[in-house]
Image (tube, rainbow, N blue to C red; front, side):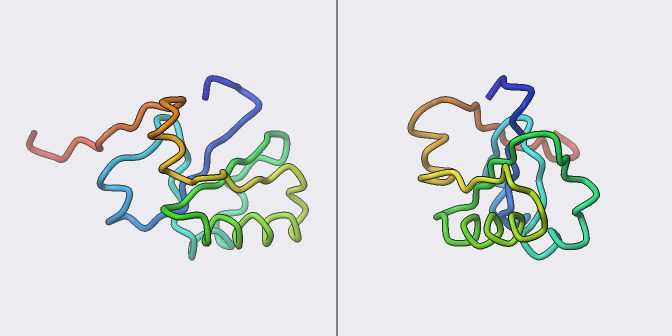
Length: 97
C-alpha cells in the first residue's frame, strides 16, 4: 500500500464507498472511468478493485485496451484488503460529525 509506483483505484459506486475504502485509493465509479482517463497516471501500476471482482476485471481489461498495460484487477477485491490488513479501510467523515 505504501508503494509510490502503485495506485489503488476503487471503482465502486458512492453508496458502496460510504462503508469504507482503501486509504489513498483513487475513487472513480466504474461508469466514470472513460471520462476520467486523464486522472489515471500512465507511469504507475493501477490496481483496480470493486466489491466482488467482476467489475474490476472488466475495467482492467478495458484499461489495457486503452494502453494502460500495467493495470491489474485485485484478486479478492475489497475483501482481500480487509482480510490481509494490507491497507487500512477508512470511513469517510460526514459533514457535521
